[in-house]
Every structure is written in structure tokens, then in C-alpha cells.
Image: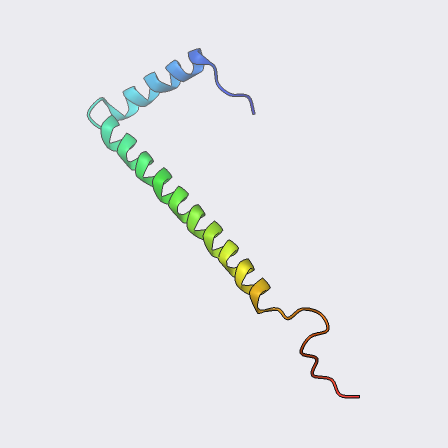
Length: 72
């Protein structure tokens, strides 16, 4: 999917301005900004929890040959 050029962006902005009006644009921009911030926060929390789980699991594992519970 190609990135829209300047002409397409201007056309899109004009359509949004016509649909929502100049009074609603700050509210829409604020809502989009909050959504992006929440998404980034959730993704970093998920990455941190995955990294923390992997670090914890490697700490809990015993090295091979140590602590063998088998009897011969």
C-alpha cells in the first residue's frame, strides 16, 4: 500500500474538515492522540512483562547435571 502524497493528504484533510467541521477537529485530534498513547503504553507493558517472564524462567532453571533427583 503506497504512502499518500501531498495532494492526497490535502484532499483527505478537506474531506475531514467538511464532515466534522472546524469545531470538532481539536476533539478528534485529542482522541486520536490519547488512543495512540494508550496503545504505546500497553505495548511497552506487554514487552516488559514478556521480558520479565523470560528472565524469571531462565533464573529458575537448574543447570544440566546439577540437582538430579534420579537414583540408580
